[in-house]
Image (cartoon, rainbow, N blue to C red; front, side):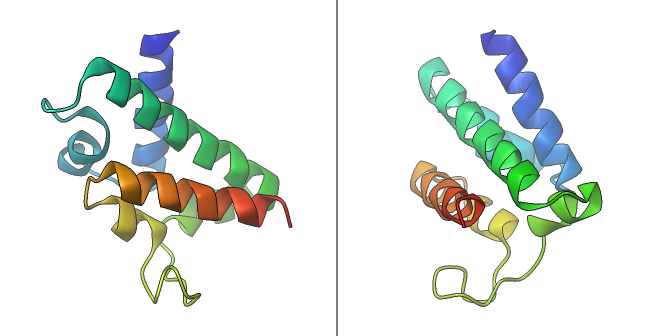
Length: 104
């Protein structure tokens, strides 16, 4: 299960346009303990699931993470830009914001 989650999260990041370096920074840095890697993977899987709820079109689900967003939180940045800083807090907040959108 744990390996599957990492595989699913990696696949989602690739679909969203992340290269190997960025995937490593967001999901698999050597400084992350295995529990943190799994938590990060669960957040990415959650984002992917929420995007499936928001968009019926697969292209929109894929492109959303690279689209600039002008709301107060994103401030003209894309979700992928925000999580590319590699911090857990950015990933958690971005996941929370996308979860909210899926509930509208």
